Length: 453
Image: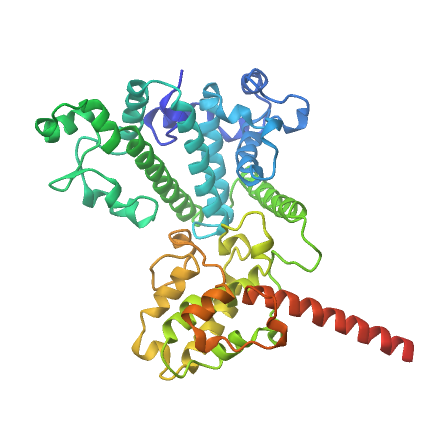
């Protein structure tokens, strides 16, 4: 039987569980009841006992591992099936709070680790909601209603109450059913507002299509993400007044960093790329930049400044520094913080180079088009904001470099090909090839010098 804390760690039941089971001294001690649930989860792979959590601390680590490794682990391995066993809800809730506290104390609310925790919780709850879909619509609606009403009154939501949700960039107002500004979530409100308009159709079906379980699920995911973010902020503020944090939390935070590094190593190892294809930050090699990029960096002297800087140069400058192998990756939907967690490279190298090219335009781009700074942030994946902050990442997509074909079509003034451009389909491909040739030339030159000696 699915309990509310299984899909809402901020319910009143969940808080009671934390009070009952959350004593710090017991979190790193073997728990026979937890082990029993793990061992009796249907389909669970029990062959490697080292991967099965025996303590709540290990369960917290496992949640994080599942999220970071889930794209590289064969689904047939069934290593983390216990996370989706409803019986684990009590220990899972405590593990969730333990993980948030470790992140908040060690890394802070604006860190890459915090964003990963937000994504992790959203993914776990999302998959649990998928499991819930095997139940009847009435049961789904009932448990979602209970979970949601621990966070918000679903019979009395005005669209303005959801401003913080909209700011997360994962729910759009156009997805909601509104009546005079009121958000229609529950069936009885739907019938009251629109029942008289429905003829010759099943009202329940109309409700499910326009509101229903899907909207409830999406609203719940967003509310949990928002509350997780706020909880981490609160813990971080409290931790700054602490004399010394609990060693258990520091140990867990350090383990989290190890898990991240292991996941990153595994991701690189499974790409199957050649040794000179980089999906991690590399130093700029300006001599390898293609002619179109060089021309753009010297400043656009005629029309088309906006597209040249925002749509063309911004993706190239960011990917050439952070992930030149973007088109060789198996997964291309990535974020800058995946390769630049602190955004230090982005702030100190990428943005200044883009801005310098914008300043070189005639007239300087930002002099009469200051809003283009926001558009640059958007193309880097940080939404429509004047500041480039981790909090905003994911609101838009990190644009990939424009193909040569599109450049010729939309910005023909930039395309001045040389002999190295033959059979090249994208400026970033040119860059990678040129770097490889330059490296080979340097190696050959070194061999000649050594033979001469």
